[in-house]
Length: 106
Image (cartoon, rainbow, N blue to C red; front, side, top):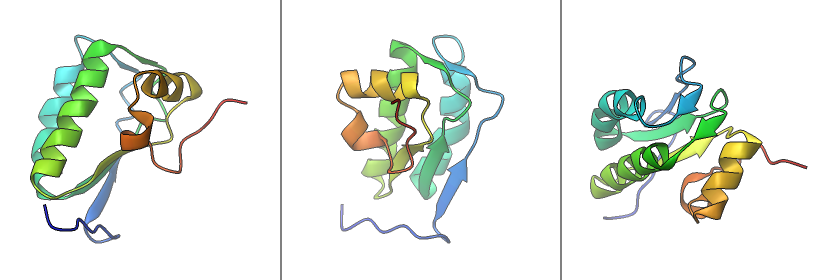
């Protein structure tokens, strides 16, 4: 990969407002929607409405991240709830996925 650059014209922020849980059973819908997009451009996924994530949700985020990187694009997560940010941190994905716009618990 040769230096990934994203700006307002090449980065898209996605806010799946219908998604409140990124768990087994609904992760495939997110993958189906975003996988083609992360291969074409940089994507920031707004998880502000997601309060719960499990291993399937984490695997979906990893898959999207990998697909984006393979094609020279960036994928990150914005506005993670404190619980989601904590879980991503516990599994060591906070440094890879969380943007500076993450919501941290006090």
